Image (cartoon, rainbow, N blue to C red; front, side):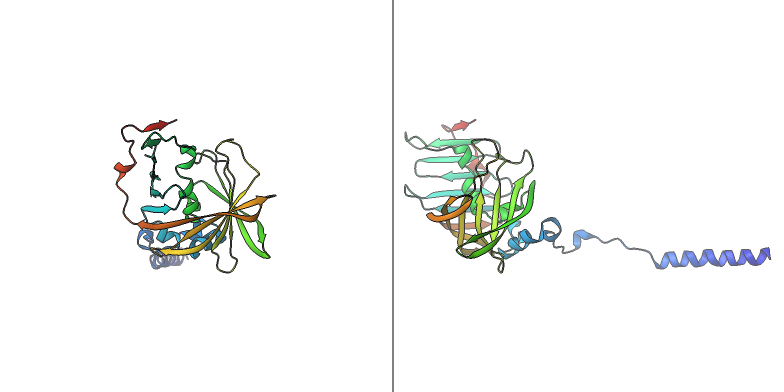
Amino acid sequence: MRRIFLVLFAISILSCNNNSKNNIVVPTDYSKENLDITTSIYPENISKVFEAHGGLDNWNTMQSLVFTMEKPNGDEVTATNLKNRKSLIEMPKHTIGFNGEDVWLYSKDTTAYKGKPKFYYNLMFYFYAMPFILSDDGIIYKDVAPLVFEDQSYPGIQISYESGVGESPEDEYIVYYDSETHKMVWLGYTVTYFSKAKSKEFHFIKYGNWQSVEGLLLPETLTWYNYENNLPTTKRNDLKFTNIKLSKEQLDTAIFEIPEGAELLE
């Protein structure tokens, strides 16, 4: 009887070993896989907005962005390296730069610069690079009530920042998008740079006249609106963007360095 038991035990062990060999799990090398990372990191609604504008995968291959704004006192050219956000703004009488650590102002003549360079140096870049700029680290997404304007309803996504992110972590944005196309239509935004405290007052920009640049949809025109009770009311002014250049090559980092005679801003 004991001998029979030992034989059965041996057969059982062999059977288990064979099953183990047959069920070996081969690990997957995900570095060689084509994965859609967007849907796993971002909420579905903002992912659809990114996709409607050409997709984050495409945006993330870009290294630099240059655009021109038509201003009453002359064209203003903004150049930005996308990965480190070093920037340069060339104006007729002034240049504002950010070298990754410091903001500087260079005056081309004795004309005083009217404005706050540390507030302005990346402001128009942020507005222009919507919605892709809203894929940055440290962002918190939240669904909010739709914006109803001229009998049209636009779903909303509120964007806030984790503590310590950026110059103004108290800033908030709301992206309102077309429910069918998922293209961005409105941006609501607060300004906290000067007060350093959360604001309950939202300003509004309408996005339109989308143009395709390197397969990505970027705005040709931004339209600021007057507002009341945190709602847009009447059109205030347009700002047109031309000479848009998106590139997979970085701009020469030397252009962002502080030139002789420039003022370093604290």
